[in-house]
Amino acid sequence: MEAGIVGLPNVGKSTLFNALTAAGIASENYPFCTIEPNVGVVPVPDDRLQRIEAHIPTQKVIPAALRLVDIAGIVRGASEGEGLGNKFLSHIRNVDAILQVVRCFENPDITHVDGDVDPIRDIDTIATELLLADMQTVESSKDKAARTARSGDKEAKARLELLARCAEVLDNSQPVRSLELDEDEQKILRSFGLITAKPILFVANVDEDDPAGEGPLVQKVRDWAAANGAEGNVVPVCARLESELAELDDDDKLELLEASGLTEPALAVLARAAYKLLGLQSYFTAGEKEIRAWTIPIGATAPQAAGVIHSDFERGFIRAEIYALDDLEELKTEKAIRDAGRLRVEGKGYTMQDGDITHFLFNV
Image (cartoon, rainbow, N blue to C red; front, side):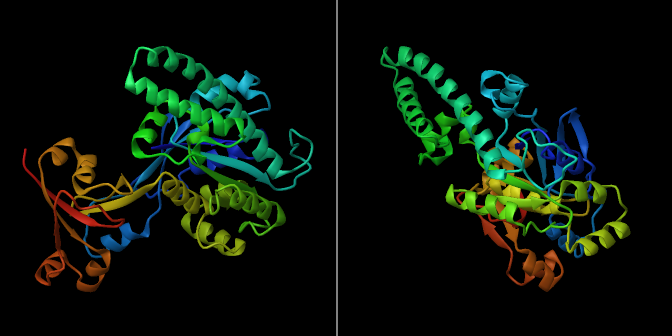
């Protein structure tokens, strides 16, 4: 799963990406690695891994991870090819979610492209470019689907009907994500590559003297998000402060966090928020070789979760043995959990819960 970081010029997008990829929230067992010049993998901090390790000694601990893509900067007219518009659009169509960095700080030394700082105007600028880009995609796709539908192709007819619904909401200046769709329609929608269908998280880049994002500019973003179906999808981050934290050792990092009134780097909060935005959750496997968080969609069944480890696990799934972290912390060992009758045996129809500690039994 990957998220694309977008924003206007001079909002701190590159600073944020560089801070994320400086491994400031990485454990020593999961270092950041660069896949391409503008792509990185960032671990999702989860204290449950260390809580499991306290009772199950292991050789290494592997957290869940997010793939982040630093999308080329957007300017007005990007949908018409202005600036790096075409590059921006081709990259953003391939991500699963959008992290939009919104400037919520004043600094006379950093010029805003529109002259003054107005986060709502910035949000509207990018929203407009995404809407215009999707309108072009929908119109070209409708022509192709209409030609195929005339032959009586049922799938083409379904595509054409959904494209018409997409065109309607876009014409009303609403994102495609505002449509209520069933599972089949969602599957068709994914094939269109529409940008406004993707979930979005607003990253409010704040001043160093307001790391918690309590100032009026961030509040404007929160109010806008609440009024536009994105309540709770705002995370304040001071990209400059996070850059400094990423370069410090643990003791100095803790000292700077305390001085800033923070309990953890804001990037840790951001990584978890992006994970949630994508509709993901983690289950754990634990043993002497490794303790690992595995990423699955919310609602995944036990066989589907097993398939994340290896396709053979899903194909030959027999059952899952599952216990809770609370039971491990109370009873201290897996053997004690089993002896106490707290180890659950689940079959193919079980829906995985966030935080399940699991052993899969399979036969191929």
